Image 1 (tube, helix red, strand yellow):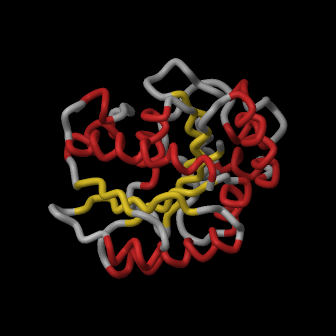
Image 2 (cartoon, rainbow, N blue to C red):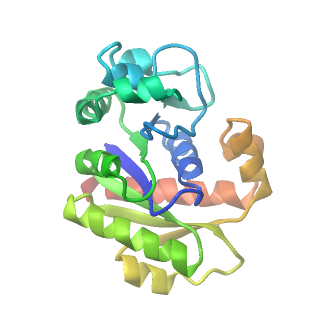
Length: 221
């Protein structure tokens, strides 16, 4: 199943959610942001190479870290050489080998945002509290609807204590999973580890476990 993690703007924690969700699902996470890669980098072929025809998707998979990843290059030359339209075929090939393919999509409404959504079986929309972040996320929600990417869950990242999620669920048309503001989560991400590995008892770990449980019900979306 191809599960695209998207968001209305940068800085809401989209990459953090994608990385930790892939860890919980025991899947592969693909850094699909061709211009601003944010997941842990690695030596060897990357997504830029795949989309430029220099490597196969499976040659770009890195399974030697805490989470199986397909990293993306971080050079302007690599981004220019990549053919974004080849992304759908690359994700489809990975989908044949992995039960869960989690795609960390570009943020916002750039032209390449729709590519991971168009091939997705379902989407996770990440937002932060605040009117501006929610408004941007609603625009991406409309894009997902236009591309027929079923919205599985909304993640309210960096939520405070006792967040009110009913109104957000009504606006987006999907249940909300809050992920609390968490220094253990931020520290784990900085060091390239899922929070379940470094802080198994943290509230953020429980939130990602709940998100993964919810995602299993989205296989039929």
